Length: 432
Image (cartoon, rainbow, N blue to C red; front, side, top):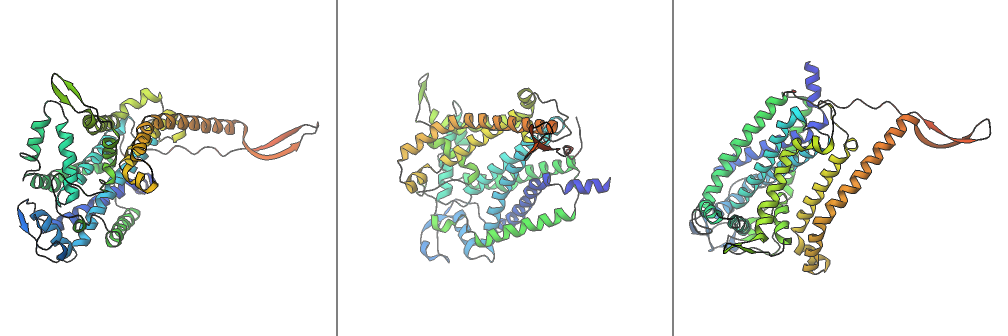
């Protein structure tokens, strides 16, 4: 039994989950280091420090302390960049793990709670990334806050009150940085640690030589990225100026779909009982992501009705054997990818010498038509591959060699295919 548990922990299917956990550990360790030097205050000071290009510029204590960490604290810039890269890798690994679970059917029945935990970790990771982007109080921070304010105000009835509660008064106020700080360093990490602990308990994870090697490989990769790949150079962007944003600014990749949806949505606004309802922000900023993550979380409940799959929930599927599920997932990826690419519509237009309006209209049409096309093509491909598998199992694999029969006829020589491998069993306990 011990050998089985050890081998189960070393399967490729646990790779992305392990990378997510290890990158979270690096994020937590580097975050503790940064806690000692960062000051979550919006009180204004005049800068006189090592970065002389900003000498005498008025800025917040939060931005000043970020500059001090980058230039005056030994190893501070490396820790900042390690923290940033680890956060990005965490979200990427969670996304990859969810895709693995989805396309192999690893979320069915007794595993649905694991799926829900990973979806929750994805949402929490995105919120943690957004709150972390706000903390330096640079121009990128003010851009993120501007989007947050606009999306909050677009909520009918309670939008204004919600905005005042979040910002503690008029935008941007003096409370948002301290509030984002405690959310980022206390609330979100505590919830995420609890969820990861629950996952470990349900999966009965054990430490193996392979998992130890993967931990050090993840740490080494992040160290290389933190050392040689510059990320978030706040000194080049400048301190926050409410209502302004640097040209060519784009959000973190994990928030690109939201920015893209806001960019390509037509400027629709209607009046309801004399009150304006800004659909141009409400639909892409609230309804689209809300519907997307709701469907993602509830998908295990929809899968059986959608696919009619009566398969044993202890076995993982090949994507081709669940054509509708695979096609639906491909359509979702296409939809997300086009919204993500639309976040750079201005950059695409500039570098390709195209009209910005033409690029925007392309994405408006593609985001509706391309998922339907992706669904149709993927379903046809899966059905074709499954049909070929059945044909080869019955008649053998085509070899391309033609021989003559004793009676003068010709036939193709087919070779028998090996018996299909037994489906991979899901790891972890099987609880109802």
